[in-house]
Image (cartoon, rainbow, N blue to C red):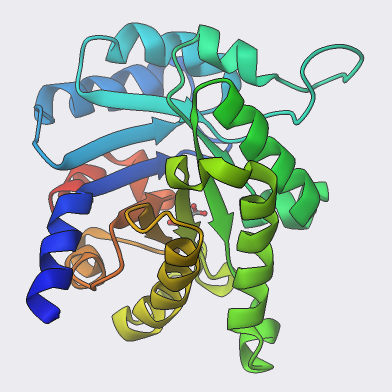
Length: 254
Ligand code: PGA
């Protein structure tokens, strides 16, 4: 059983996604993207991507087209077009070559009111446009301390699964405990693996057993290796550490 699971893990491959959040600028991006391009060659079974602020998508497209590094956005509107001031549609993201789009990041849930239903709708429109949603789930510290971790992440995941219906296998799911994001406090590999195993069982039940499950929350070069070695952790969603090329590449190589 153990050997079989390890083989499955190898078959799933590995994905590391940078989430720049609201950071960057033309000059800094050019330097960062340039360093990534110079130092990341095609690596079988390993994929690297950056999710960047909307205005810089055209810059990323120019810098990363015809490289093995993919790019994407950090959010998408659940609406197709029309009177939604400030929003960006999935079709627009596709025009700039986005392969990935993060949906349901805890910062969107906390500060911008993205509900489970909205996150599900965003995942659905991203898939319909041909992108891969990186659907984020994660509990707050209070929820963890109340013993509600599993219930919270499954509720969040189920909303996405209900919305995407038969397309569950096309998702990437990221477990990001809210208390570990940007705090320097990482879930231990065992804590993260326990939640990932729960998510894996749910994805298995949805007929999507080889979906990539990423861990996010204060991943750094020095803790990435033990996290990524866990049975059900297939890579990471990296915030702060994705802004420095050497650190991000070290994580991608972990
Ligand atoms: P962090 O952020 O790596 O800075 O903790 C992760 C995320 O929010 O995606």
